[in-house]
Length: 452
Ligand code: ATP
Image 1 (cartoon, rainbow, N blue to C red):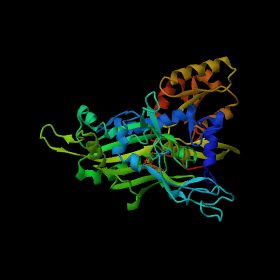
Image 2 (tube, protein in one colour; image 1 turned 45 degrees about the vertical axis):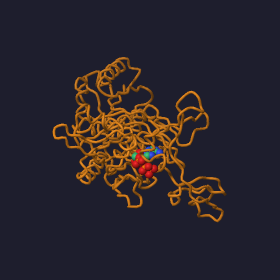
Image 3 (cartoon, rainbow, N blue to C red; image 1 turned 120 degrees about the horizontal axis):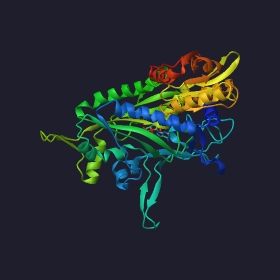
Image 4 (cartoon, rainbow, N blue to C red; image 1 turned 120 degrees about the vertical axis):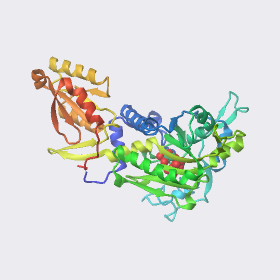
């Protein structure tokens, strides 16, 4: 790809192919809320599945949890969110826009030509005020007597408050972890940049409980593990970096945090945070609830409060990073094509079955039968609409790694063409072996090819 990738190119592909659309569009949209269409859902679900596999299926020391979104309000007092989950905001009295005081060097001023807030002579910024990011709502039918509760701004607290339940039931001994994927909500004051920062989003968080004297070692371990997970699914290592937080950036609970950053079209930005939360959370909830959240060895009677290492990833931000890294434009035989070179294991559709001449009844029925067979084991699409070149391009744009074409030769010798999205190589495979052939190739190692 000759030009640097822009966010507009990603937004436009997502819209064109129905991955992601602005939410509530028929009512004029609601800034920074997005709806996920068919391919967006499939891609997001695949990213989530790969995360759960790496966390739960491939390990013996992590179990899964799905806690409620609305928790007892005291959870958020004990965690420090009611008092401290704030962003500093400033308003501009001139353009009436609102900005994050700590993002002035990247935000755009409300006037043209566009500058950073505070840079034009008309800018008239207020002092910074703290603004809590939690959405409030009420439980109970009567407004006045209802209890104020919050939509969770992170999934982590649902894990901490279940520590005792899970540790007992799962019969796990530290080091062990609890993993959870689910929606979180933040009343972000300066949303924007497509699905990078939205009002609601999904998090993939894992709290790893360890003996306190092993915390530092596990903190390092999880930074490396999480970095490797992104490259395993196709992100180019040169587009990833680890940025340790400066001392003054650390959250109140953290003794060490490193962001795994991705080189998005908007520049290096956080993809995932890995934090050494020490004993803050379990101690805070023990004190506030009166329930001891500690690990007790039933054999020796030893008891202690474990420290916690947290890799906290954003599902939507990961999906955006996978999309950006996969996006490519190239010229093939004087024709431009846009292709998403997604890792086959996260690609929304694995194979497209295409009858070369759809009106040929024999070809059509062979293609239908093959599609029926393949869809039992993988996400397979059947497409008989339009010229074959256009059908290939449609599949390239949604990142389908393989296209199987049923043509005249199929009728003569029971073989089909398997086309590779990345190399464009075409191979003849016997129809009886296609399913096995594709399963082998889908399970093989995959590395991102050079950009076109
Ligand atoms: P940022 O500094 O970008 O606001 P954060 O440090 O507050 O992020 P965390 O609290 O560490 O984020 O949340 C863990 C992950 O959740 C982030 O790395 C990101 O991937 C994701 N995330 C956080 N806020 C949002 C949001 N508003 N929209 C989409 N994803 C988000």
